[in-house]
Image 1 (cartoon, helix red, strand yellow):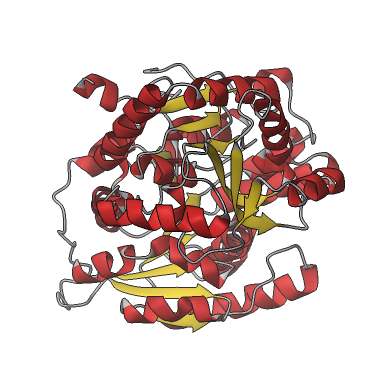
Image 2 (cartoon, one colour):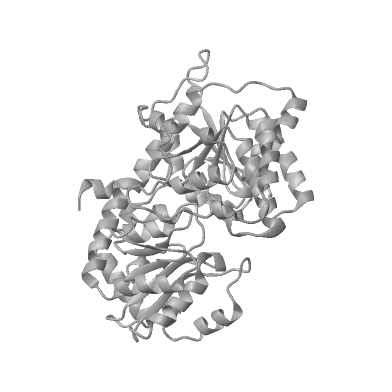
Length: 465
């Protein structure tokens, strides 16, 4: 495999000049914010809705603190925030509803505004749709000088009717109230611009994508992990020589669960000993059809692990990971599988297509197409040498492009650049309130008719484009 092949990134948009400037900065050089107090630490506050989302920053917090940042987390109270304390971040509890709840949302907005006025961070980073909406509004009204919105995906892509319009409006407001919109993949940036959610000038991607990178050492193949995988196979009742298709994630319709089931049934005709390993659990939102769920649960060759604290050992059981999602921010489980030396079959959907080098580390198929999914899986199941070759290439590519230290350093450089750009222009409170809902937000909402136009359909991935 050539270095050129390993450096392929599935961006379907032009390079971002902002990112080029970030990469040119020296790492771990924190700007002085106050000449009169050169020892003051710059204060970075993260706002997330669900406390479990803090896990997406594991390791990054300590990296930022060692570089000289003071770090705070504002989220729902939950035991998942305990590790944030271990890494030295301040945790501030704030009840927030994940779903739409107008009255409670107003209370959360008021409390969040008061917290931000009290702690006065130099930068805020908001993620998740509700935190992006409330956090962005509160930060603007609290005159926080530097506001970053990390765009993890577009929930409205797979919604319809009034819900699609509402979700799109929420994203427009979140992007409008941020000065910087950090997209977790190139195709997500392109898609958000295409759908009119944000200005091209404020949208950028760190490196090849991702919010926190991949802990490659945790996933790589070792003799001990191969032995552990053999033990797990035995405990699950999977024969040592049986082929295994794996899936990791939420068991919902928009993860392509219906297509996965149909592809599995089709493949059983060619591979009678085939097993399906499902890591995760069913969810009530966007549920899988009851009939499919019942048939999967009654199939002796289908294995459910439930929710796991660590999925890494289970990747080494799989021959191939199937990830037929309809939309992603970035296919994180796809990258984890490749870091484990497992080839991946995923889709050309937003975010998913950035997580595989088509024909090199895995295969890309159209979303909603169970026949194409089955054909790609069949190709890999029938060719152990190709699986090995793709698995090795995937582990090398993920280590080169997505290892967490590389992403953390690029994130640090990005925050340094944001600090150097100075304070935003101050507004009076009435003008700040008016600016929360700008003209672009209204135009975005007017364009959100609830359905994708033909011109909005995702473009097919072209390797090396």
